[in-house]
Image (cartoon, rainbow, N blue to C red; front, side, top):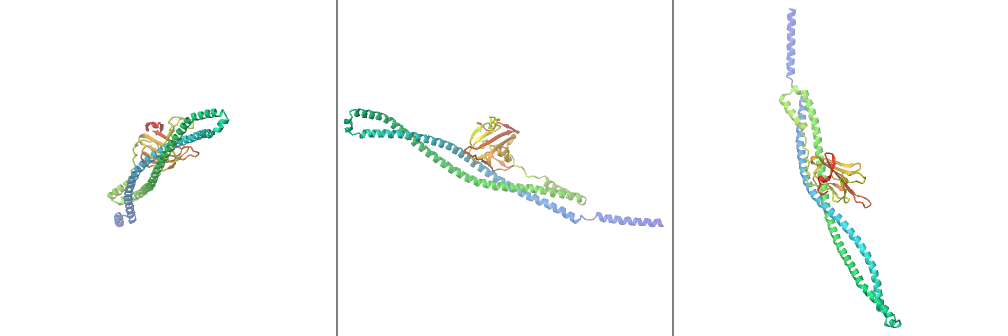
Length: 394
């Protein structure tokens, strides 16, 4: 009887436990966990939407930037032609002024000789007849002097006329050159004003684009954190949700984690051109100022001249580098890199795509009347090579 009572009590307890277990299994997902998961999923969806909008904005800015780059490249090419013309005119004017100074000095000497000759002629002409009677030998000497003076006159007149003609020609040429230089200065000033406007616009767009890129990166980092937190929450509640919900959330998390903005393709090399207009003073493999074979070329230019990208590519370095001053390194296609050193101001940033002929900055200034020099080096697969491989005529 006692055993049967214990058996009934055991069955009763077991029934109670089973009932409580059923209640426990049927319990709903804790509200705070469900709300947290939904909140993170909503954040992921919102971040994805905002990221798409930011990428759309960045693409629009990129198109505007490319259009401005093409316009700037065209203006830069015109400005470089003007800089080259100005350098040529400066040299021609300097040579003309030197010749003019020499001719004026020659004419001053000739004028002194002419003045003495004219005075002698005047004296002979003004000599009264009575003086000739008082001095029997006077007429003979006077006649001889007059004949000598008369013989020299054609030569002196011809020389004076030739010098005057040359001086007149030089004055006319100088006036013409100064007129052209004034026109070029006006054109250059106009181009620089337009270029300044474009540069300001590029700077503004570059800032906006850089800000947009930073926002995208920041958002991606934030999304990765959100996705990581959501994944952790899923691990905690995966036994309390349906399989379909888990797959949907996992899909969103995977997309949020692995979606990245497309990197800008490397621009085409375009028509290769030297970074500045000027004379090459040191060629590849020639001895440089240190007495060692040069791995690049030195180009003499005008202080403040535009420095442009020799070929299209992506800027990989921008800033000062020991021994080279301000330098820009551009990555081109097929393993080529350009090193452009000696800039005063840099107008590009790391990661920016540049077109062939697009301004990178301006050339530095030299003191003491010396002309500034830009250093250019072409590298292939990390090794310096002859720039003649890309630049015809070097």
